[in-house]
Image 1 (cartoon, rainbow, N blue to C red):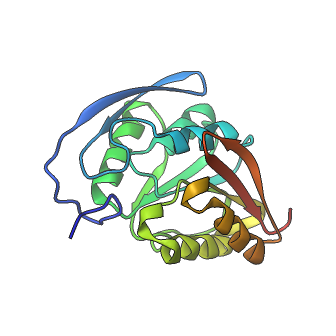
Image 2: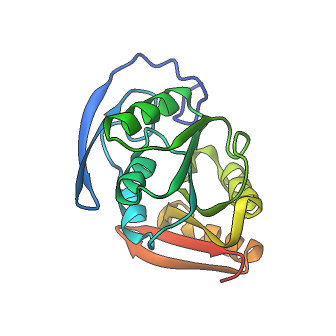
Image 3: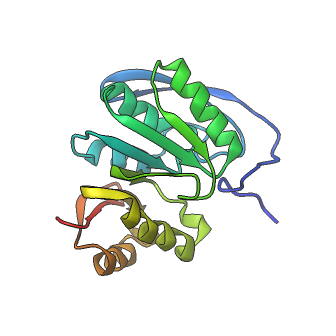
Length: 197
């Protein structure tokens, strides 16, 4: 069976590399490795997600954090945020911790499947979901996110149009009081879903 980036303990041989990225006008440095999502650098979907996010405050969850691009970038821009990062992939969470330290950013990194290791509620839950894990997994994450949002909080998800963004939006409209596309770029749709608009 082929291993995916959402495998909990990748067995691919290590092949670490350094990636320099400019996000929000800041130069950040990351270490990536084989067996994690987008190890060659910041993927286009995450770029779209970061650019489309509104100003953030309070407690934020980076769901499926990978090697930490979103959590590190947000922590560098908003040092007052309480950021929690989580991923099922042990190699990814180890890299995320290293990348936080390398960029002088504080956040809590948890290893586990979806929301399993996560406690409490958030003002924003942000995800570039693991599309290859399948619709049942993705929609399960979307549904569970509702129980982890503070009043006025929202889920932000970026999905490529041809990989199911329209059907994901339809599902979210059934589960959330307000779900809409807030940005379209490079074939990706950035969706915001909240319980109270």
